Image 1: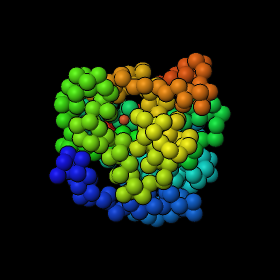
Image 2: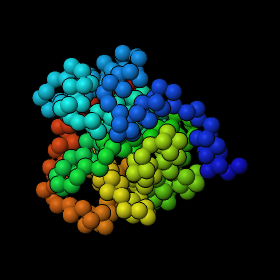
Image 3: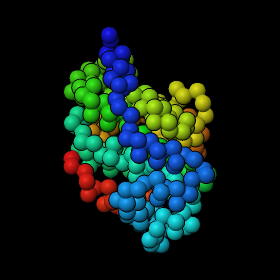
Length: 284
Ligand SMILES: [Fe+2]
């Protein structure tokens, strides 16, 4: 078995998410789902409290305090409620302690949140219609990295050495040494978790969007947001600052310096508003 096959076999054997998490993903993706369905599904009141605490962060509530999911649904819309229910459900997986990759757990969460915020702010700044589940896609884009680390399937030092010696990106070094990179690993997992196709594509190609054959706006937004977030030093870790921004994408999105500056500043503001709601349980 070569390294790629070993990793694929391990990923295949990873137990599926808890039944309640899978059920919430299914509910969250179903446009028929209402706040009552989520409350009914989550008999665990702690989850509803946690979700409410999270949506009451200034980033989401924009000045309105929500005392129930129903109120939140009325104010922010059903789609947002369903998306944030999934984010809250998968949050414990993103918060798994990180050992490799030279990055703390807290910094990894900061990075995932910042990419999610940046992608949304970029869509707004470009006056584009925000793709469904964009925040979720940003939040999960590095899930492959988190899982490779969790199951000790990678050796960051070895990858870094290869990247340095061969003068290639860390992602290219992953691919060279393991035959697979964390984008592909993430996409395999998200497919198992029955996530939407655009979320899977965005994770798969977030470091190399021009290799994606489909035209996926979500992917462009995640890639650019990820590059901004690394540019301002959030979650750099072993991935380093080697992160090419593709001219094709810049041109496709009509990026200007003013937009770049605006989005970067919004990422910093959004992160300040949202991070405290994620940090309480992180250990790194
Ligand atoms: Fe990544």
